[in-house]
Length: 56
Image 1 (cartoon, rainbow, N blue to C red):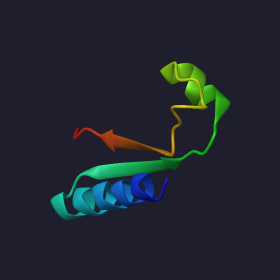
Image 2 (image 1 turned 180 degrees about the vertical axis):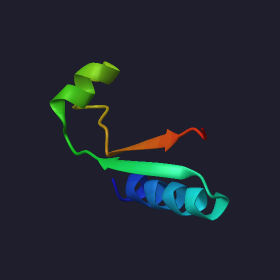
Image 3 (image 1 turned 90 degrees about the vertical axis):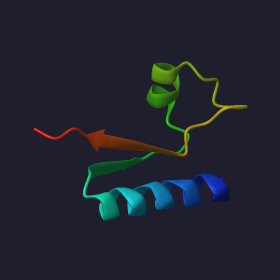
């Protein structure tokens, strides 16, 4: 879980440096997200979600 958080932090930082718009959506044991992605929530979990916005 700690490594997942570090990866999220690095992605956020690198997106800011490159000027890309990023919306972090933090999740932890979120049943709707698990159902959407088709994961069981026991062996595979979602620690965080990142949404990159395309340029207009």
